[in-house]
Image 1 (cartoon, rainbow, N blue to C red):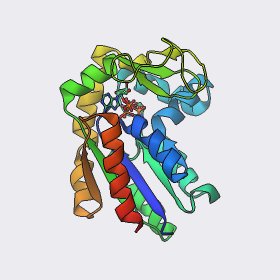
Image 2: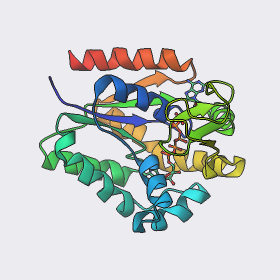
Image 3: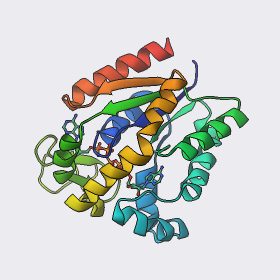
Image 4: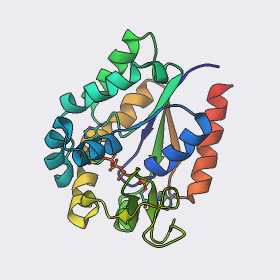
Length: 220
Ligand code: AP5
């Protein structure tokens, strides 16, 4: 089976986490979500968490040098030898170049970048109603994807919380940051011929089906 080195790209709230969880169940590849890694580090008050918190609370990106090493180490591990799913990385051109350099060093390359397209107004609607599992980061929405019991995670029974960066002014800032720093990666990966675009404004199940179709054709 050919290896699958996948990147999920899209604005905040486009559904990267929602779809990433489902692809992870399908593909059984290691799933590295930099937002989850950083929130875990903040919770555990590690050096990484301490240096990341102020940027995250403002809706800014943490510096490239803080995050690149975190991902490079995971990609270069035994568990990622058949591939991986990256969610939230790369987010800047220097991060994309660092990822390419690491993969070249390993004799590998990005197989596909799955861009989940969603307009800004929809992002604001989604993030305003998002609820996140405190323990493992499982994602819900009060209207579009409610848990079976209000305020409780279906998967592990943990309390559901509103993320610190899901406040209206921080959501706007994150969107601005996306357009300025991350959106240039669309043409970066188009130029490499690996970008696959999906319409993220449909039902989550329809988005999953399209992604599965794309991945099926990549694997065959
Ligand atoms: P991160 O956690 O990666 O945040 P993000 O990219 O802003 O993405 P989100 O987690 O907000 O959204 P998502 O696309 O995963 O959508 P979700 O599935 O939850 O990063 C947080 C912070 O960490 C950054 O701001 C930055 O400071 C730092 N950081 C992380 N990586 C970094 C890096 N590489 N470099 C520098 N800094 C970094 O869905 C959203 C909501 O919509 C949910 O409620 C969900 O239920 C609902 N939903 C999902 N799909 C649908 C659908 N199809 N229809 C209706 N509702 C839907």
